[in-house]
Image (cartoon, rainbow, N blue to C red; front, top):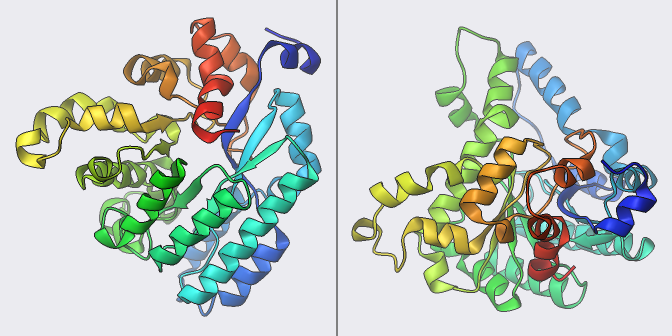
Length: 345
């Protein structure tokens, strides 16, 4: 184990890619567009208050000096900044586009304020996929961003639908990845799959979100996109999937057997697309068992480091990777090499 930050930095560069922030200007713009919310029962209100307190670690999201102190403590040289939520359900396409442009400009400001410490993922709205594709182009070509983060679905629509193809075409042409992140699932899904008279609404809300539901839905999002033929159409496209791949890597063999090419009519088996085009991150889940399994399934060249700051409190993230049983080459790839190659950080 390495004891000091100075020693850490001389040993290995660390880049993390699922690191979130927000800004008061963005929050105020969102609040102005929030509109009237549907009424909630007292138990729902308590659950939402509980979830919000966990999902919004305010000072850490807003305070960049605190963020930099954390990075130095953990030996992180570069964070790729992203917002997990930008516009409310009641925003129009034009309003959403304006907030996204503002948010992306603010991200660039933070990158300029701390040179060399931050990269950026674009924040996009998908109500108008053509506009979103143009904003991605602006963010990459003019602002120097290294991809985009997509949180949840777009008003109930998965991105495997043909209407979203302009965004994937733009990402492929620009050579930047799209990172898929969880968001709160629709209420009807929570009611059907996660609510029970046997436990409280708070348990249901947690099960439907960070406990399981979020991860299942993001896994389905990526699976649907692969099955839609997006990689046959755009063979240079790449995705990033957090939380060790949101359960999909454990099912690759099963999916090849059941969803074979005779059914899918794709050019390759499902697992080949996944292993070639998807990069998996830990998202702060510091499990050596999962790290070893993912490297065995995906290869070290398709794993990128992430801490999910500030939503997850990690111990010593540097030692987690350095003290693993991986080869020195694999550690280098995960710590920084893959991010440098894929994201040009």
